[in-house]
Length: 319
Ligand code: ATP
Image 1 (spheres, rainbow, N blue to C red):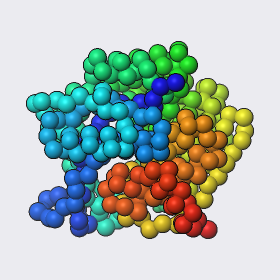
Image 2 (image 1 turned 180 degrees about the horizontal axis):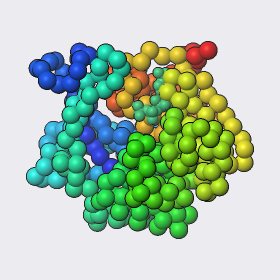
Image 3 (image 1 turned 120 degrees about the horizontal axis):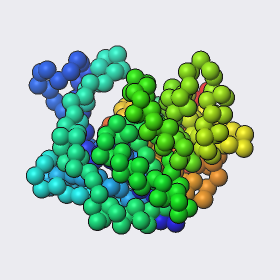
Image 4 (image 1 turned 90 degrees about the vertical axis):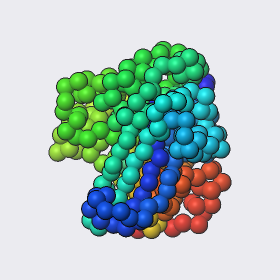
C-alpha cells in the first residue's frame, strides 16, 4: 500500500525568548521554525523511514521554502503541497507565560493555508495513499473537512487505513455539526491517538464514566487500536482484543512542549505501518514525544530511527 498522507496547515513558528503576557511590547524572538501540527506529524513519520506525503499550501516565500526544504530533507513527498503566489505562508507567534500557558498570534486560514483544496496533485496522492492521518482541529474547517470526508471513505474502500488525533477542544465537540463530523471520522478510524480528556471527547462520553467505558465505546464503533498520550506521565497502547501496553515517560527536561503529541503520533503510525508490533511502536512514539520536548522549536527534536534508538539507550525512565 501507498504512503501515509496527512492534510492541513504548514506554518512557521516564531517564539518569544522571554516569558510574559502576550506580544504587546517589542522583544527578542527565536525562529522561524517549520511548524503546523500536520507538518510535524508527517515530518516525524518521514524521519522514522515510513513513506510519507502531505497535502497543504505555502506561500512563494522564505517561510514556505524553509518548510518544503525540511519536509523534503526528512523524506516527505511534498508534490501535493501547493505554492500559492499571492498569499504568505502561515505563521504562529508564540509566547510562553510564566504559569506555563501559551499566547499565540496566528496568521493561519488568512494565509496560503486557507487555499488548501483539491488539486490534480492532491487527487493523485489520495488515489495512491495507503493511510490517512486526520487532525481533529481540521474538522471545524469546512474546506479541509470536505476533503477528509471524501478521502477517508475512498481510502478505506480500497483497503487503506485511517488514524485520528482527536485534538478538539471540549466546547467545540459539543457543537452539533462538529459532533457529527467527529462521530463520522471515528467510525472510519482504525487507530485513535487521544491525549488526556480527548479520549472522552472522541467517545462522546463524560470523563466521569471512566477509561474502560470510553475504550469500549470506541472499540464498538470499529476502532481497533488506541494510543493514549499522557504528557510527562507517558503513554499506553490499547487493542480491541483487550491487550494493553504501558510505557513510562522518559526522564527529560522539558524545553518546549509544542509538537510532542504530533511527534508521538508520527512515530506510532510510521512504526505500525512499517510492520512493528504495538509495544515496539509505543516505545518509539514515547521516545519521539520525549525527545522533541528537549529541543526548542516544534519539530526540531523529531528523530530518525537511529536517533531514537540512541535516545532510548541513553535516557532513563521516570519512576
Ligand atoms: P501537544 O498538543 O503539545 O503536541 P499532546 O497533548 O497531544 O501534545 P502529550 O501527551 O503532551 O501530547 O505528549 C505526547 C507524548 O510525548 C507523551 O505521551 C509522552 O510519551 C511524550 N512526552 C510529552 N511530554 C513529555 C515530558 N515532559 N517528558 C517525557 N515525555 C513526554
